[in-house]
Length: 150
Ligand code: CO
Image (tube, rainbow, N blue to C red):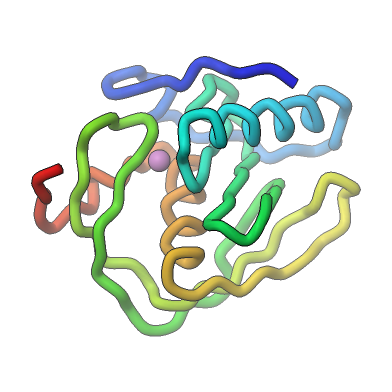
């Protein structure tokens, strides 16, 4: 495993749309492992592949309950809403309030290529939405309703 460089601020790659993963190759497995290591080292709760310069639909999340690896994640259902503070490893030092669904259901593939569904509430729902947005070139600051002082 290796640390990858986290792209920040005006790096154009953060605005590009990521491509679906067609084959889960050893390169994708290495990417998942490197992303997890990079996320933990940076003390983040989620990381999307474009944040490390790879335009593939790959996400890792850990909101405190262990690593979740998502390949080709898609939101299939949402319920309710929550407004709360959000930040991003690609936008250092910035926190803002963002409205997100309270509950989201996401369909994805695991590293073995098996489809699974994960339902997240609260912080996990927020992280799922935030990271999947990255795959479409959307940054949380696009959705901030109020910036908060650090
Ligand atoms: Co982010």
